Image (tube, rainbow, N blue to C red; front, side, top):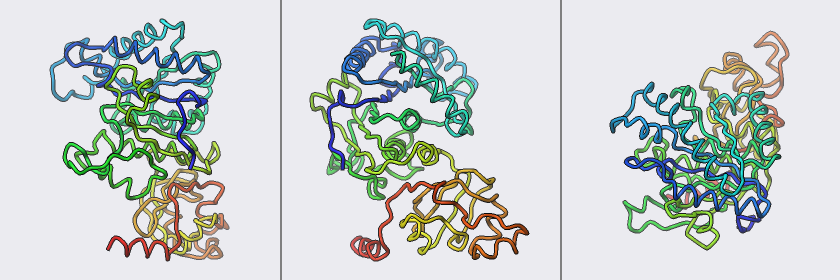
Length: 389
């Protein structure tokens, strides 16, 4: 496991900032907090680090500027608030960073900008050019056009995608919680704080709550998802509180925070893109034998596929689900969904007879696949299951 190191020893850092840290519902922008944060950023840059910011707050700030009533907003109201708030937010960042003669560059991303390979590469090139000339990219989801069907939905995972896209070696998630606990600390007085997380295991994921739980909505669940995306690519992650002024300095001074170790075997740039896909087009459920083969670095053959969910086309990213129901890998599938269903569970030698053309022997080739979970042997899993019984 890589040892935790000082922030200024990282080459490229992505910082995600929650909207509640930047904007007060009654008074608007927290200017003093932002100025202190920008001073922290300037200090990191002076020591040689590239810094990128994924900043929430456009809708909250626009809502304040427009004096919209409290309560849930309609989609068009949220988009209008974002349109007004994004201008104010960008101006605020630009002004605060300029105190240290740092130029800010605004980048608004939609889901397709990271999920579609060509747009992903274009966005990466723009960000890298900004960093090359010494600017600080201020990145946010383009809430003025995003709908529930085509959006990230949270800036934790967006920040992780930006970190992997740009080859960052550290992702810092700042919000109103100071790290990961074994249970929600406000509900369980016995909850224990976890300072170091060597690997995101099923047990760690369980601490964040289920994907559909009330506690996890916009909270720890998305941070753990972000951690899985970041650490797979070799990027460490820190979850820390941003409530105090100068939160980066506070982390350096020993303030409580949770550190997630990066993978010791980070994947290639292309596989990083595959692993970070937020919305796989479908699922391939595999048997025990296929899972063992994948753990040994082999391709996924049709014979090991037991069930297929979703509608997808050849070349789409799909999730590979193990016998326990847990995602273990992702990859670019070699067949359309209908064809995949026809050959699932069959030997590769039968593909031509079933489909009418030779096709590929593998449902997903190992070169187009990345493991998203560590696979232990069957005996090790049985021992582990027995220990929880």
